Length: 445
Ligand code: DSN
Image 1 (cartoon, helix red, strand yellow):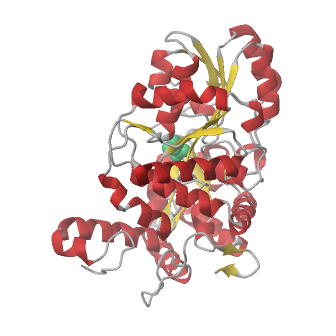
Image 2 (tube, protein in one colour; image 1 turned 90 degrees about the horizontal axis):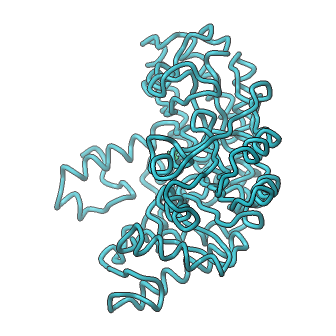
Image 3 (cartoon, helix red, strand yellow; image 1 turned 90 degrees about the vertical axis):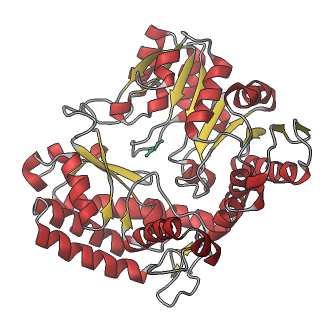
């Protein structure tokens, strides 16, 4: 063992299962020593991880608070009620389900509550920045339902609400899905709600990527305009991995019964406890400061990349992410694939994901783009100056087309920067941050 203080375990695991302890420790060091630029990832606080690793992992609690199929649920009920209350407060929602194991399960339950198999849903195409569960043919959403898609405007690379309306009028879907995994601009949920109502559809918003920004009031909320809002809890929201659903009180029963007994069994009560802790953190003023900095950092990174000759889809960002279209970038003369870029950056200590770009010509396994996000770097206290440095490293590695000496040099520099911004513990093993505190005036506290 190189280290024995990964926040995910104490000495108990080292004594009982050295093999797994080593794997977790290696992952801990990977997270500490590398720059995490995957837009959908973040660092949960130690408090969140403590709740997730708690005794509630032992408890079966099928059903909902006060209506369980098992005895001994007093504290499971208390944990779930606390999670629901905090979540409703966070988003000004009337009702919520905190049991979905993931965003996909949340979307599945909502679709099943609104659609019969074979009925039509209209969602954003995956290759334009949507999500698998918004009707992709390889996903349950495209196999169980008749899925049609809208994309981005070819010139502006932005959502074109007139185009969405035209498609909705033509296709008459029963459900209109809004939300994206790789779209860097504000989504006009009010207009999407109007389009849905005009064609007699329900609006479902999957706000997984932007839910932290919405909670902080930095992106318009979909709650007043939607029949159901779904999200994951681990992206900008910075909680444990999982899903949630928000709705009106009258819509709750239908979706509750699709989560359980419809598609899930026993809820993961330890994860629900950790969700409650994360929602409590998101209600703190420091969370808003953090989200503001996430956006400032994304804008700084995007501007620095443009200066280096990269093409950023839509020309910038309003949120936590950006999509780099390498086929339209000067760096690499438009020839570098997303797959190559992801691999070379990984070897240099920068973790990104390859991503299709609008009107993609390559396969999803190769792609012409990479997606970058700033939630994780911002959690560790990095600011605009560090974003400029990150852009320089990306340019250096890609300009060299994966030259080994360049990647080795950049990796060493990345490691040095990371040591100045520890995620959980500093070099003396001292507790660094609770993961919920980033003060743009004074750095991470
Ligand atoms: N896999 C997630 C993302 O990276 O955006 C979406 O579920």
